[in-house]
Image (cartoon, rainbow, N blue to C red):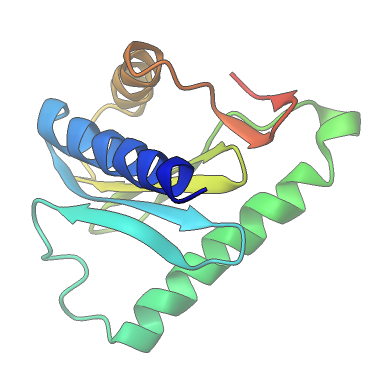
Length: 140
């Protein structure tokens, strides 16, 4: 059991490191569990989060988890959710559901949304990840 947990932790860290290393303009990558708790995070530029208190950062993560969960409720009627994008004055937020977790990515607000989604999707394929909300409910 400990070996499986260690392997999972290494995979999560690998995902964060690869995304932040290979895609320019990313401020941070966080993996969040379904309850909105941060599992792992990697920062390249914390300018967008340095003004947030720990409580505000936790609230942001919980909001993204709740948003993803609520979107899933409509999957049967509207189709599966591939990703969500929030556009702010200071950054773009990309939310990719996978397994029972969420990859939350903040980038420069001047990046091409289509190019960034394509790069992230290609990286997921290279890492042999399939984005999923729950095991068995394939998203991409």
